[in-house]
Structure formats: C-alpha cells, structure tokens
Image 1 (tube, rainbow, N blue to C red):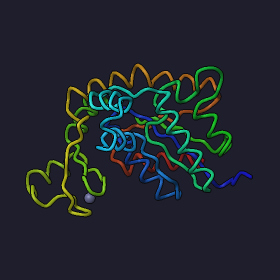
Image 2 (cartoon, rainbow, N blue to C red):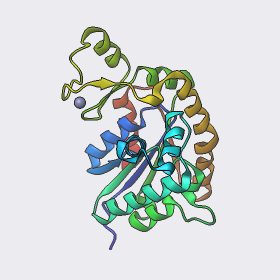
Image 3 (cartoon, protein in one colour):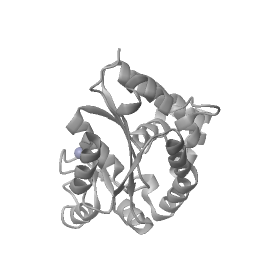
Amino acid sequence: MKDSSKIAVIVYGPPGSGKGTQADLLAKKFNLIHFDTGQYLESIVHDPKNKNDVRIQKEKQFFDTGRLLTPSWVFEIISGKAKQIAKAGWGLVFSGSPRTFYEAFGKSKNSGLIKILEEEYGRSKIFFFLLKVHSNTSIKRNSERLICSNCGRQLLGFYSQFYQLKHKHIGCPFCAGVLRKRTLDNPETIKVRLKEYQKRTNPIFAGLKKHGYKLHQIDGELLPYKVFSQIIKKIRA
Ligand SMILES: [Zn+2]
C-alpha cells in the first residue's frame, strides 16, 4: 500500500546550480533519503577494486572528462536504488538524476525512472525543480568547490576561498578531514559538463511537460536558503 505522506523530489540544474545543497536541505526537512547519483557513480568508477573491470574503466574515462555515463548502465543502478529506498518506506530526493531522456522515460513508452517513481509514490507526490543559473556562475562555483575526502561535505564559493587562503591546514569545518578538488571540477571539464547538460538533460524537460508534470523553475543565483524557501512553498502549495 502506498504511504501518502511519502514524496519524491527531483532537483535539476546545470553543474554548480546548487542542486546537491538543495537536495540535502530537502532531505533534512522532509525526512527523505538524498540519493546523490554523481557521488555514488564517482565512488564506483574510482574504486580501486574496479580497476581491472573493463566496462567500469570505460565509464571512469567518461566521468573524469565530464561526459555523461552510459544511460543503460546508470539506469540499472538508479532504478535499483529508487526501489530499495521506496520499499524501505522512505521518501526520496534525487539531485540531477535521471540525467538523460533514456534514464527518465526509457527506450520505448514510459519505462524509465519516472514510471518507477509513479508506481512507488503516485503521480501527485512527485515534484520537479529546475535551478537556473548563468553558465559563468556554473564555472565559477565549480572551480571554487572543495570537497571533504572524509565526510563528503562541500565547501562552496567564498567559504572555500577563505579556507584555502587562511586555514590551509585546518581542513573540513565539520570533521577536519582533508579537503580536495574533484577531478571533474576543472574549468575545461566543466565546459564539457555544461554542454552535456544542454544536449542530453534538457530534452527531459519537454518530456515532463508531455507527461503532464510541472517543472518548477527557481532562480538558482539566490543564496541557498532563499532558493530553499521557494522550493518549500511549491511543495506545500
Ligand atoms: Zn568533513
């Protein structure tokens, strides 16, 4: 039986639009599981255990150069995770996933992730958001981003600048772990990621409309807490 209080939220936006941050905030507020597809895939392709796996090494090359990974492979992973989370009784928030039309709607009719979410949560409990930012904001935010190699938290924008300049040896403000840059956050790779987003993720938005879903567009240039309050308003409306 469907638990009517459970919701599924999908937050879209180009790299650096703040979708991961919003997904984290949503997870706390509504007791959802935030499944960060990018981070999960990164952990698979960069796992030393997989260094002799030809298929995964091919995906790793896509990943490190900013290209999207093979949709059928990604779909297998995210659909399994979505079902697991729903069956365990949790609401769910995805940041930036499903990333391609194939992952969202499948090859033929509606057989992708959206269909799975409909079965698990019901159409009226699924919310879609698009965070809009300029491409120069994308590039700036991504090239400044630092991530904690221990807890995975991200330091955004001027915080990361501040930390690099003044507190080089202090590390993550939460756990003091070593801060690192992600392989995919260098400016050239970000440009590839932006192109991939425009070419391969954008078509999903028309598909959503066709399937009768509203995509709520939010100004992602605002401070994260302001973006968040707009998102909450839409969910509660
Ligand atoms: Zn940390």
